[in-house]
Image (cartoon, rainbow, N blue to C red):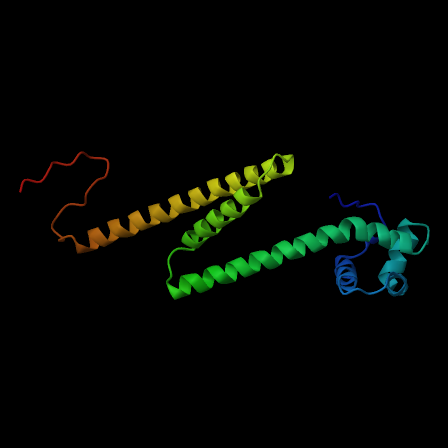
Length: 180
């Protein structure tokens, strides 16, 4: 979705546009919003300077609602979901119930099972599979990071337990096998 920077509403100050989004989200009527917008001195200044003094009208609002407001709603939903996931991750980490990616891997497995049940020959479903596979690759990368972190933790633990007079093991040097 492309936001046109040329429209009347797009040229308004950010705070006014944010309040407009909130009013639209809350179901305020278009006519009332147009009256509110045109009563704001900053709006009157913008339309006078850039649009020949023609005030914001319901058509301007309708165009804004179809494009920019729809995008804003999607962004708000994504932000809300992201915040919920982050909160859940913090709760899981505090509870000590394993790595967050353990839970994410379970989530992806569940999504695959649901998607498998809904599959058909439709192109959109192929796109969904492609997206799920892409997501899976991301989870694999996260898991590799978890495994590397765990390996590093174990190495540090090993080094902390090692007697102080032994030289540090160099991972790049070949080791002599220990004789028992």
